Length: 162
Image (cartoon, rainbow, N blue to C red; front, side, top):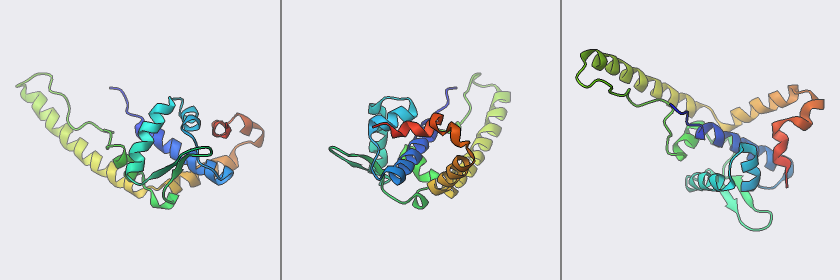
């Protein structure tokens, strides 16, 4: 099963946006974000448009424009971002039915379905308890511990591109 990485990718982008704005005082362009995420700027624009509709980001047009967070980091939870993305499946709803009518498979699938439902509820609660500020604080701790001589090669420097 292919892993859906939209949530981790967009959280990555949002933190780059916050760090870039704090450091440079200006928004990040779709091209800059695409470079951070190793994707196409069109993908960034399409994804950010969905987040803009939910009030998580704003866009500024023209020279010097780009994407900014619409709220303070403390006011955005991972659960809100997950919801704005259309709640991509982090866990399956139900296991597949491979052998129609098999009572063993039915027992296994019922147990797994209940387990998946409980895990989704725990995951949703956890996502709602973590803010972008929590992630930014973790980044700051990691950055402070990062050897200064290696900072030029750190991924975070990619967002410096014009």
